[in-house]
Amino acid sequence: MAVYDPRSLKADEFINHEEIEETLKYADENRHNIELIDEILEKARPKKRGNGYVCSGLTHREASVLLACDIPEKEEKMFEIAEEIKLAYYGNRIVLFAPLYLSNYCINGCLYCPYHLKNKHIPRKKLTQEEVAKEVIALQDMGHKRLAIESGEDPVNNPIEYILECIDTIYSIKHKNGAIRRVNVNIAATTVENYKKLHDAGIGTYILFQETYHKDSYEELHPTGPKHDYAYHTEAMDRAMEGGIDDVGLGVLFGLEKYRYEFAGLLMHAEHLEAVHGVGPHTISVPRVKKAEDIDPDAFDNSISDEMFEKLTACIRLAVPYTGMIVSTRETEEVRSKMLRLGISQVSGGSRTSVGGYTQEERPHDTEQFDVSDQRTLDDVVRWLMQNGHIPSFCTACYRAGRTGDRFMSLCKSGQILNCCHPNALMTLTEYLVDYASEETRAIGYKMIEDELNKIPNPKVKETALQNIIDIKNSNRRDFRF
Image (tube, rainbow, N blue to C red):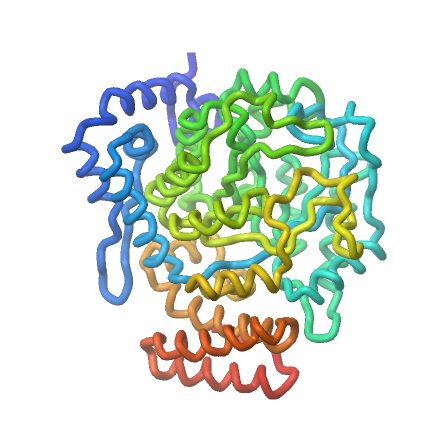
């Protein structure tokens, strides 16, 4: 029997089934232990240090106790502290991005994904480089600066060379004042050699969803194809780190397995990355199973309510305070609005989950990976964020200034990253307002920028940011950053 060891490089040791079962038992035994719960909540609360804040985070066992706790006033305290942590580390900024689907060719048999090999109902499509360029121009004309590219696993149709060529094409397109400044990559687990190639291509974050940390369920849900190999998939982030990629993104597909098991496994994975590499996940995504062609979410009996989904999000924020948390357009406007207060720091906007969807006037559905619940335009999302007190940010400065991995985390954990992120958000928002926004959005945005500039404590930073914003408004100069 495998023994739990967060420093091990073996999947069944750093994500250990017996440890998770013991954790869930411990959480059940202590879910009404008021003294322990209060101690955990106090540990999670951000502490003032110098000009910033520090948060100690929680272990997977501590966080699991909170998730199991059903005492209403303690749940309210969790939500309150989650918002405090979000504001302490990320301020009121929300980073925006869009997914770009390159190909739906796939040789895996995943039971929850419409791209599975046996699905004969969807047309298979792969973008040419000319089509990639057109998609990028369409995304730039919306105002996007950050993409997450997606592709099925197919070594014949989607080899690593194809992915690298697409990345090169994306970075090469400069249309009017538009440019994609950061390409994150969500492709199947691969080799150290291929991760080195992705690193050399200048990617931002490498994202790979675990789908489920329950090994038996994982193997049942992935009956055929290379993704069936649980250990190879689960150990992918260690190979990515070995290949030089120091920003990695975790996630599970909630609804496939019992959420408390997934929650503990997800936090154990974060602890493992910290223990082995000295840096935890750059992002954690929280998708839920959604309806898609040939996929019925009701076939999976582990779905969770909106209320529990929000609590789960808050508990992740308490446990891993430094990580960026992502919610996509899988969720409705109402759900996303609540989750923004509970720790979410990144959202997609104007998303299309079909291959080649952005160049079409009408939203295509025949190649969608999942139904999009929030179908608003990027401009609608930007305006909505501002109306709710959030600064829409298109910033990519840290990645392009080399503040990645442990360099980003050291700034984030000390609270010092706010000294550059706040003005960077305002400058990139100004770019969006000048180049792409509707009149209504522009008016709201300029008022927000004026108010937020006055919150910058450093007079020199404030003066420089103000001058850059004036230059953006009065010229074609772009891409200022701290």
